[in-house]
Image 1 (cartoon, rainbow, N blue to C red):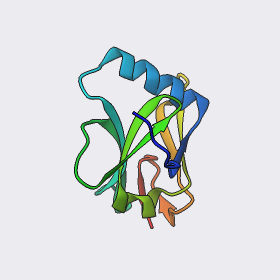
Image 2 (image 1 turned 135 degrees about the horizontal axis):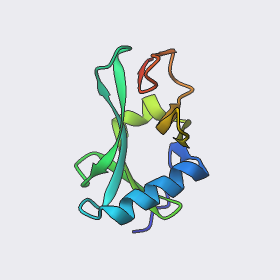
Image 3 (image 1 turned 90 degrees about the horizontal axis):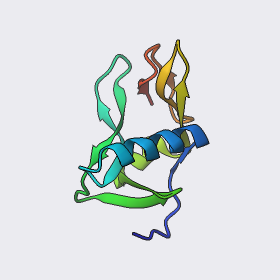
Image 4 (image 1 turned 120 degrees about the vertical axis):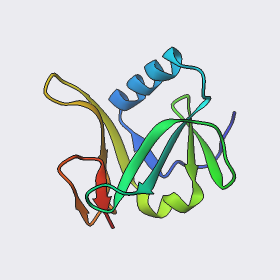
Length: 112
């Protein structure tokens, strides 16, 4: 897969390392999907999951990781940074979104 598109989201080196590890462990779905869906305490929730390509998706290759994003989600995610924290107190992916007008304490819910 080759993509000449610039991805609207960025991944830190820690997130890239963890996603490569996860893709290596489970090759059942060929892509990582980044997106949003309605719900959560603030109105919208981030999506970061394995998936197959669907109509309306843009395909990106970020540091060797095949990433999908629905074109309509770019409005909400443009400029977002995904990080992976591997500490004892906090473990998982975190999202830093410059488009969010407010966020929830859970770290996965936001409003625009």
